[in-house]
Length: 125
Image (cartoon, rainbow, N blue to C red; front, side, top):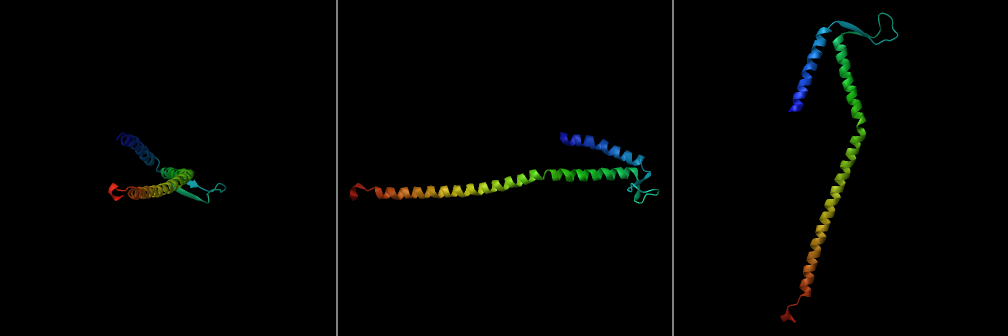
């Protein structure tokens, strides 16, 4: 509950700031992608300033997310390996448990049959 409240408390001013920035900076600017070109630049695009900055922000978030995801590849690989090892260990433990139960049952049955053979009723002798 507190987390949602703090999120709302932060997102509302941020949204208002972005909206005010967009309204205040509607004038088009020329973005040139030709560092060696003269006037007029060969690769250019006229965009509103707020749109250019928002597109840069979105691109930064995407590139940062991809970089973070790629940086965590080692941990994901370790987690997959540990999960596979755990599954194999559980399978082996279940197989050993069934084997022990089967051996215990066989020993109990053998003991019962040995006791029946070893025991003679006094009137039978």
